Image 1 (cartoon, rainbow, N blue to C red):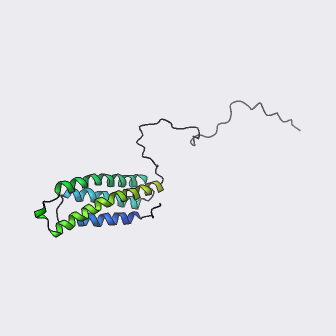
Image 2: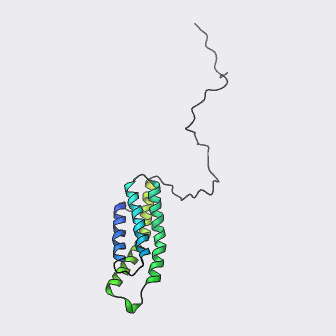
Image 3: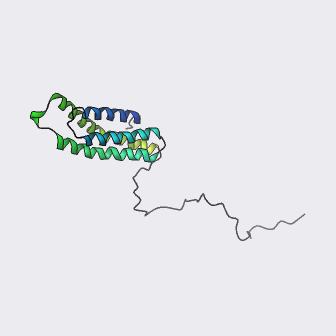
Length: 159
């Protein structure tokens, strides 16, 4: 099943809105806002530089990292039940909704990474086993003339 193409701008807009609503009632510390808004700023960089693999990869990495930090923020700073007001409940709910939506966003951003020419698998450069150089053609060297004349050709007689 093929997922429809989603614009990167729409992903950033939705997460920006959910982050703003999540920060609305000061339930979470400033690190929640700084973490999420800085990743969204990297996402804006990925929008501006459409051909950059680094920008989209850093945005994807930031989204994956904020999944972890959002889980920590929500679990540590969730208020006791007697201190929950409707506004706090809404703010925490939007933060949870943003957290639940981030894996879907990560998948869509990974698809965009592949469309921009990224590899299918993440390569951290540690293993080089199995690298096939049989089809490798150097492009920085001109074809050098052979050192010895080709003896398979017969010499042409002058007229």
